[in-house]
Length: 67
Image (cartoon, rainbow, N blue to C red; front, side):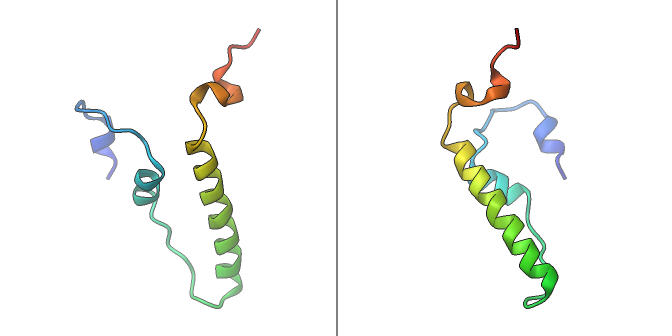
């Protein structure tokens, strides 16, 4: 499934659309308690992706060298 990510070739930027297509969500039945929780988690995940996509790598704390 993910072998194409490990093969050499032209690089493509990792975009929100690419990530959401790569990680397809499978939700529980509509109206169930599980689905309510899954929707909340998915919404937070999407918010995180959009926020991360809007920042440059230098803005992330892990990109700074530790002293």
